[in-house]
Structure formats: C-alpha cells, structure tokens
Amino acid sequence: MSAVTTINPQVRQVEAPTALRELPGWLLWRYETHPGEAKPRKVPHYVGGGRRYGKQGSPEDRAKLTTFGVAREAAARQGWDRYIGTGEFVGMHSFGASGPAKDVYRHFNITPEAVVEAARRALKA
Image (cartoon, rainbow, N blue to C red; front, side):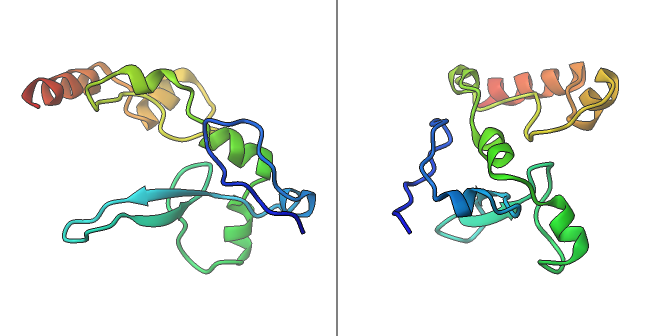
C-alpha cells in the first residue's frame, strides 16, 4: 500500500489508496478544547452534523457514515470565512443540510437576532 499524504481541507486533491477511498465509513474529525485540558481533543463527527455517539458499527452508526468524496467536500473550507476577522460567524457549520430556507436558517440559527448577538460579542472583544 502506498503512503498516504495528510489530508489538508484546503486541498481538493488528496492522495489516498483507492481501496481506502472506496470504504463507505467516513466521518470528520474536529479538534475540541475542554476547560482544564492543555491540549485539544480530536473528536469524530458525522458529516451531517453531530458528534459520533453510541455503539460504533451499529446499524444506526453505519447509516450516518459517508463516502470519501462527501467527507472531503464537507471538510473543505469555502475560504471566505477566514477573512471575517472577528472570530464571529453566523452561518452553516456543517455540510449536507437541505430543506426550505426558513427551516434550514432556523436549524443553524441564521437569524437577525444571532447576527446582533455576534456583533455584540465582537464589539466586547
């Protein structure tokens, strides 16, 4: 098996062995900081949102795993958000949600109130 390069979310072309890419069990890993811990933890999340909980390999767990291509796209930053500069962001934080706009906006808290609160936090910083 060939060496695998580190997957950098900003890079769309990832070298990974074909056999590995074809496996249907992909998810995302995110760093989470916890109070009192010096280092952040690497925690698995489903591409559709939410932390991976429960029995790994169960039918419910396997149903939430995805393909390599979908996981790669979900991990890729769109780029513009790094220029915000305030540390505040109101928008979608995961990949793959669809539905009527009003429902998706409510689900991700993309509301005028959320924008006002983000602005207040940014002004306090």
